[in-house]
Image (cartoon, rainbow, N blue to C red; front, side):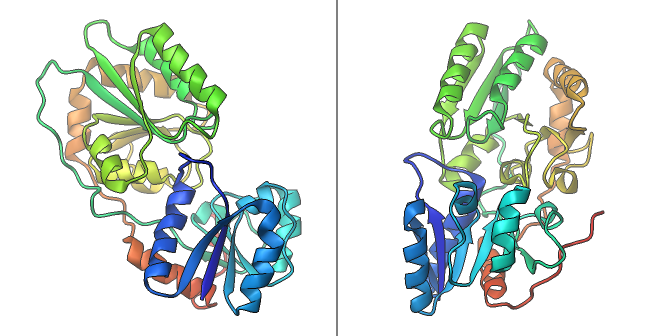
Length: 325
């Protein structure tokens, strides 16, 4: 049995990491091979001891380290969606049996002495192209997916749109993500959209079918983030046939062929990304061409991801960190 322990979430909080754990947790439960247990950080020591006493394999969400918890006494596997800061890595990595990471880039940040398994997220079958009929003069529909937070930089996107939007073509923006992770930033984003006169709609969805429906209705997915470790939202957008405009972070370069199914810019090239957005908004034919070149990222389904996760926890198929490319 596997005990997947994670910090308790606030209502309405969702992210790619939580989605990963929910997909794995649901399959562990239905197959009788484990359970997902949210708990307060203060309850971690007792919960870990109890799970170990039952003979369960402990998998701990790396968020416990970020929240200031100390490593528990029983042996554990550490699930990392992002790299650990050096001081936390020094405390947590020597005491874990292995690190389960969701992206090759995270694996490359770990010391050679750490046993590592890369378990990338999956893609649901609902993420497929499904363009909706629309009139030629309809607004250009942009979407940005991710929690409304400073790291996702939705305010920066609003300012950019205000600067480059064409006067002759209406633009609609949907921000798809939770507003509880950084409520002050979310409120500021709402106010700024109104001040700039940008048609901006907010939605928080965690059900894959609903996320897919929002993506399928979009003409362009824009990501302003500079610090993705994987980028599930971008993978799902591309699977829906939606071109992506983004900075080259996470796994984006593995899925996006620049100037074919999307546009990628170096992390410091804000001017290049802004110039490209202006071109795309002025001439949407570029978006239609990119949509015709859509390609689904080569990711497995969640059942296969769960099998890989279980095998890694059971110490099968563990690999050394991939070498940098």
